[in-house]
Length: 102
Image (cartoon, rainbow, N blue to C red; front, side, top):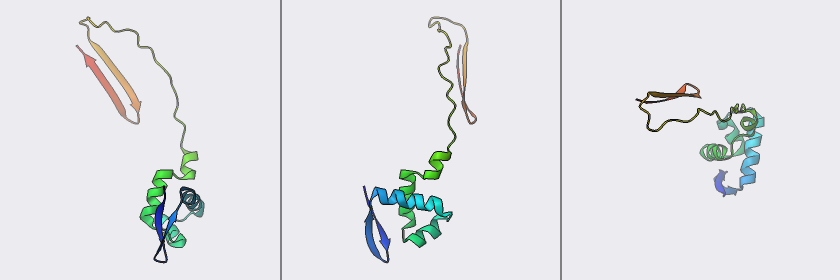
């Protein structure tokens, strides 16, 4: 998949590899999107779109790994029982799933 980009009012298609190289240069440049795109002759909106599609090399490596906890056996539930059942799952980042029966 390629996209056209303006350079001196002349549209030029860039390959996926060219966009990956531009995103890598951006990550190393220390510049903001606007000054980088002006320096490289890139459309800001197209650059932002490709950056969201391909990701930024520095953010891919810096993302913290999720802790894997594994399966937790809660035992079996009696389907015909009349007792109260409450289940509370803390999904992280303040999200709690609370299920109750009875």
